[in-house]
Length: 606
Ligand code: F6R
Image (cartoon, rainbow, N blue to C red; front, side, top):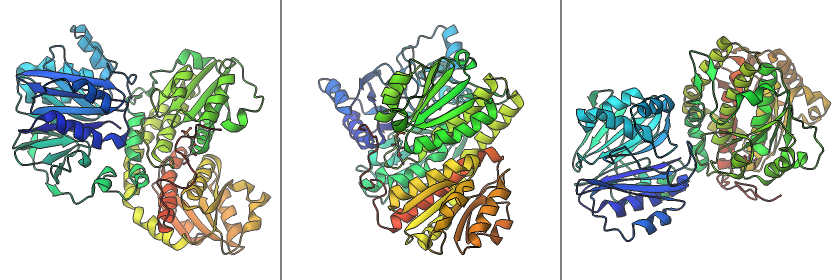
């Protein structure tokens, strides 16, 4: 995710900003930029690639400004190039802005501004906000930002400068984090504490709906027009802890960011009242012709793909095959002009997935990559692309990228169901409503994580685990087992619960815990029968079920409750406790869960 830093004080701003940007490098980025106000004018520099490229550009410039902003960009809207790098300017060059997040209705606003003769120089959603402020600037800088904020929808952290009022930085938060570093005679604004921790450990975290006016010696915060006070906290984190926002591991930080990753991935892609879904880089006309879908992926991405099979077949009545890329590469699949190929990959660089597509792409009617990394090989290789907006994932084990893949795939299943004429707008609207609920429910689940930590304590010494699920919860069983083995080195297997009697039941004894994913859905009775068969043989049951299901107490030794929701959506809530269980068991075993042995984040060799 992008990094934001702003400085106002008596020192030259550029070195402070470059320092702050370097401290935000761990978040990942593909371009960087800086803007300062000097002698009533905005000076802006941007560069593709590393911060050192930006430093190279400003080396020869006598940058004297004592107020400025800087940004590292992780591309979402538009390619990772200099034109799209932040900060962005309005037409007059007097307003400059940096932004994290997504302006959902940017397209409409851009069209409106184009009609008013605004000229845009980038493909970003961010740039429109500088132009929108320009429209209202006669009201004064602060008022103009307030008015412009009322026009936009979405998730954002914005930081803005105006050359006409060089004594202030204005910042606004809705969904994306922003924190003000309170110094002596100087203040900072950043997306994360490490960027200013060397200069001050006093931090004021902004909340959703906040707009802050930051001068050298004062911070004023309003929330939706009303003045509010926000607590100043003393940060006691070490630099290393600060990079992880105080979390012990990147993995936990990323599990905690899943609600946000989910939200960022769905936002801007639907119109709820009309029950409509749209993907910017996907051609709906091509999808109409499709009679079969083949999804290809590896590891965790394969599990997200597998869940999508159940949804797409149910919603669109199109046959879906899901293949592990390393197998597909060396087989002879039937792919023709009526086949849609879908690649699912966090990195977009997994060699097996790329190679599988090299030979198949020409044969297929249409192909789409669902990837997280903008500009990655897969994102460029296929006809269409759907970006998952998880932001950079540093922990080796995929967590928030999985959640954002599911978000994209759920939307896609509804979308193709509609294109194929199998779903009506009402059904899609209901689907969108369910998806919108998920981030809030994940946040509630995260508040209850201590109960899973206790459970992990109870089971961390076990040597084997079995995970069972049925239908769309079956891929979740596969994923739960994969997460556990990756980061705790405990042997774990995932099974379709109906397969239990065909083999794994031979393993039942009092030493192997059986994790059953058993929400109250159409197949609940069937999975309860499986649970009872294990219970009858003195096996141990850990059940994941929905909160309103009171009867599970009769069968299970331990229960992890998840919130109630329409049954197709349970997997989105099952993923979180499965990840937490694996995480806490790994931590209790003293394993470096961020870098488990022998594993690489991006598998670029066969
Ligand atoms: C598991 C994990 C791996 C990846 C797999 C595919 O936690 O991270 O199994 O899911 O290597 O990687 P991508 O999604 O980058 O193609």
